[in-house]
Structures are given as structure tokens and as C-alpha cells.
Image 1: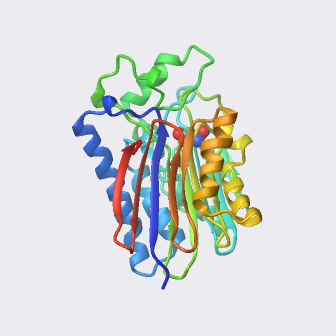
Image 2 (image 1 turned 60 degrees about the vertical axis):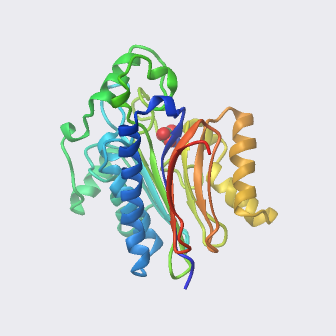
Length: 317
Ligand code: ASP
């Protein structure tokens, strides 16, 4: 049996200890731990890495603290448009949705697209129609409304500025209790030696109508290949798209023979930094090596393994 491993993230960015009250910090820790437990329970029952990734992400999407599903940020038009992707490292199958509205769990829709649409990615109304036909759960606009995200958008909606929801400059004047951050993702290694990755996001606050980030793009924000690694990214998507981050990590392992940690370090701490891209990623390989790597002040993250590791963290070590 393989070493079971599940790693998750809830977004990276300017996340400083001074920004979170102990109460809010505990809510984040609990949210991360619940997601780890939900995904790991599947791995323990010999379930697939794919299902574990979907379960962990569903838990994070349902938690309004995170910028995915329920807690998604607002676009320039004042609506929520979500992106998500999932990838199976055992066969390189992938499913993705872009710019969808009113889907309670975009990661479930991405998985359904992978398994039943004959395509890799559906967007907007086409994705919605497919979701309706497949009986995927919908939710009304009110479900996605969170006051903090709304206020965050109101502050910048008249500008051409768009931002990660966890930039320090958009926190000025906000009560500390109201901080809600984080695109979400998960990577897993199952008992059968297979790995998978998934990512789900509301994107960036005040993003243009129709803007699609890195999260749903296989190879950029999400990638899995049993031969190399499973990766889920978070950060300023435009840079992650241009740097093809997730596949670059895989490529460095496959073609250059680097270890998982070496490849993650080069891509996140050297190449992305040189480009100006803030953020991070979580990674696992088929041997159970993992990395939680970021170049920002913090990243909501967690890992649970059959080797007895079970931890969540927020700030730089
Ligand atoms: N990468 C996401 C995007 O650009 C945002 C995030 O990770 O917070 O849509």
C-alpha cells in the first residue's frame, strides 16, 4: 500500500499574524482541518485520490471563509464567477469549468465534466446547462453573498484595479473579524499509488467580466501525472498562466530529474519571483513526498499523511 498523503491550501497572499484575531485564526485552522479530515477519510477507506481531492475541496467551498464556492469574491459587475479544475494523475484525465455562476460546488461540476461530457472544459452558460442536465446542485445568488467580499469590491469597483483578495492594502479600515481569504486546492496520493489535484476559486476581486485565471487551466493552476507530481496553485493568476506553473514543476521533474521539492523551489521562489508573480502551491508525488511552497507572506495550508503528520498552518514558518 502507498503512503497516504493529502495536502490542501486555502489561498496565499499577504497574510500576517497581525491581521487575524485568535478567534478568526481558529476558524481558519478548523476549516482547514475539517477539509483535511473529509478528504483523508476517503483515502483511509482505500478511496481514490480523485475523490479525496473533490471531498476536501467541497468542504472548503462550503466554508465562506475561503474564496471558492460560497465565499467567492465579486467581479467588476458585482457578481460571482467561479473557476475550478480537477485532474487524475493515473490517466491524465482532466475536467474544468470557467466563469460559472450559481453552482454550489464547482469542483463537483469539474469532475462531472471530466467523467461525462467528453470534453475537458466548459464555460459560462454551456457549463450551467450541462450542470442542470446532470443534476448538479445549484444555489441562488444570496448563497454566495458575504458582506466582507462585497465591501472589498465596493472599495475598488470604480477603478481598473483588480486584486488578490488577500492583499494588505485592501484590508485598511476593515474590522479584523471580517477577514475572509483564499482560493482553495487539494492534492492527494491514494493507497493504489495514484495522485490527483484540484483547485477551485472565485478568482480576483473586481476582475473583468469573463476573466479566467490559472486555477481551471490544466498545466497552469492544476496538474497531475503519476509519473511526476500533483499540483494545485494559488496566487496572482495572470503570472501563473504565463509561467505555466504546475506543468513547469512536473517538467523539471520529468526532464531534468529534479526532486519534488527542488522543482517547487525553482518555480515558486525563483522563476515566479523573477516574473513578479506572488503566490504558492501544494504538491505531492507518487512516493508520498510533499511540499507546501509559497513566496508570499502566508498561505492557508494543511497536510495529513499515513506517516502520522497532521498539521495546518497559515504564516511563514
Ligand atoms: N489564482 C487565482 C486566480 O487568479 C486567485 C487565487 O489564487 O487567490 O484566479
